[in-house]
Length: 148
Image (cartoon, rainbow, N blue to C red; front, side, top):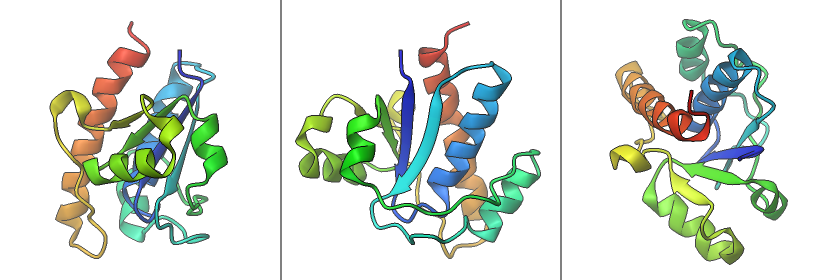
């Protein structure tokens, strides 16, 4: 069982906050005690999620307006039971920097064999596409983490 799940992207202002918000929302509806958080490999520390990310989740009645970007730390990696990343390169970077993380870092799109491209500074359609992929990846993981 996974008690702490960490979701990682590059800046922690687009993809990982959206994934964190969606996953937390789903887990709360399941009355789960699993803790989900997010961080970035090159985080824009202290910044909020982008306006577009916030708006897209607000449309789903998920509020990520209090999100503040955090830099990935050794402590976060050690404490996480499962680390989900958006791109293969991020997986490699974490496993290279924190060799003890081998076996607990996986691509969010592992089960569908896809990466989630970074929508930062792109049009809303880039965010919508990333969000579709995040949804699919999270659904695949949810089926494996909390089978009904």
